[in-house]
Image (cartoon, rainbow over all chains, first blue to last red; front, side):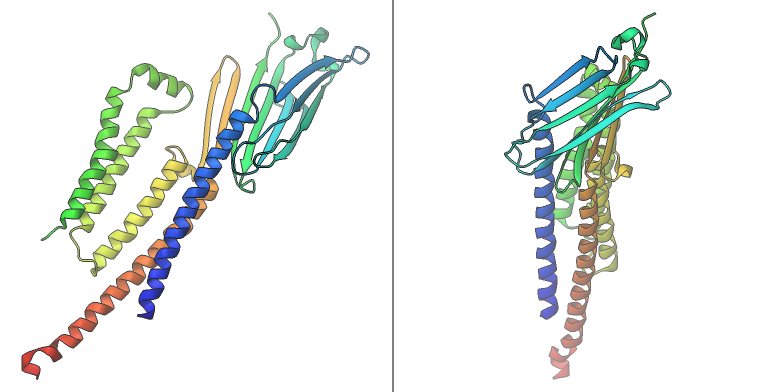
Length: 157
Length: 166
């Protein structure tokens, strides 16, 4: 009889554990995709590219005020980098910001591009790669979605 | 040899949903959709074929379980195999068709000098699924042992109740 109760308790425990796992899985997937669609929607981010005329250095600034309408808090991670054609870093910077459920938060990320990698001061003709990484993590950063873009810049023929 | 009707019905249902429908779906999906998916690094035909195979194995396992008594060792073995197979299905679903990734999906596509990589990390749920599978196997073994001991008890008490023994 005692054994039977133990088996029943184990069965109930397994069912409870399964329900909790499924609920957490659905909640975190919903939060991730919700954060993807709302946190980076129009008006919450702006990207500025300026050139310091005295030094010739380019400065890329990404400002954001993401909001989270999901049920769980999320950590947003942003990284921008400029690489040469061999894949070596020329400039790289990253930042992360925690946005609580139903809340907003601010962040700012800047990247200085040295003038010697930009031929004749024309950024569009710079050879190399521009890398942009965006990640959303939730559930204590244990579940996440990452999007990485690598764009190749080529000199005009 | 007898087979439980419930097992046959369930096996047929699984076969229809997971094998026949995905195989039929392959011929119905327009070619342009398949090309669009594959250009994004996602092979839809391969995914549907894998689902069909999973459905076939699942229905065979359910059908086989229907042949054995719940107190028999083959039933326990099949229960454990089914539980492990369910774990593989969870890995398959979490890895969007790639069970070897254990919940980590990486999709890459390149077009016009732009490399786009998407990574979905659901490894936490793969770990939780492993724990659940372990607990389910322990539960199956305990249930089997309990059913076995019940049968033994009944066999031991039966001769005492027969009219000859009185």
